[in-house]
Amino acid sequence: MIFLRSSVFNVIWMAWSALMAVSIPVNLLFHRGDDGRFVRRVSRVWSHGTAALLAAICGLRYRVEGRENLPATPAILACKHQSAFETFVMSAVVPDLCIIYKKELDAIPLFGWFLRSSRMVSVDRAGGAAALRAMLERARGEADRGRHLLIFPEGTRMPVGERGAAHPGLIALVRHLKLPVVPVTLNSGQFWPRKSMLRRPGVITIRFLPAIQDASQFGRGDMAALVETISAEADALCGLPPSQKG
Image 1 (tube, rainbow, N blue to C red):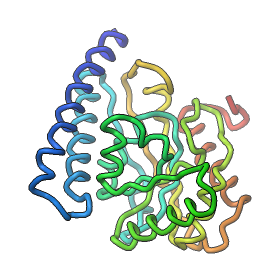
Image 2 (image 1 turned 45 degrees about the vertical axis):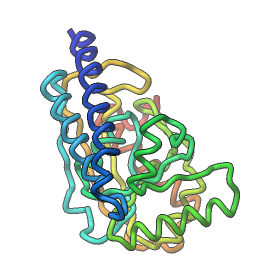
Image 3 (image 1 turned 30 degrees about the vertical axis):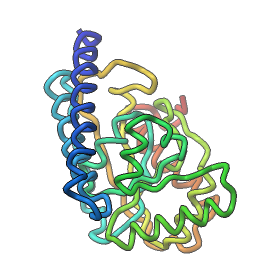
Image 4 (image 1 turned 90 degrees about the vertical axis):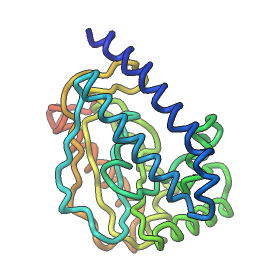
């Protein structure tokens, strides 16, 4: 039954995504010069629609804890990454979110165009110092527009119970922006596993932890500690004992 429901969801989700993607170029003719705001509004509609499809077809819902830890002014949200789920649902949870993503995603048809058009910020890992400076300035510009910034400190999706190495390029981002850093943890990998077509029923928890207010001297040790914090909290949400790492 899980396989059947997941298959039905995947087909309808692709159709829903295609409908949203087709609507953007048409409507952009009437929303030029809005700095990507219209595309981001469409993204939030798509995110809410996807969450509704997951709930109706797969019995998979989500809840949010710790909203009081999310500042009213721009902050960096450092999120555990277990699944494709958080890449779309965070736009529904946090309005006008700016996602920091790896530049390789720009090559994906339609999706890459969406990321660029909605003023998300790419990280060119092989671009050297010049690419890093350009990324920092773009991120500063989006924060100055009042947007929260979403980063995945491990840089990629990790299986439940595992940790990834802290991404060094993001340390410069945290130190440059001097914004509060909000650790975000979740257990999405239990229900939407990495590299799997299955969508299991249940409730995904997204938890905002207390913010790190002073990140001006953020270093490698701090980033490693941040990864451990969101990973240990994710383990707890997944029901893993503290000593179990995989």
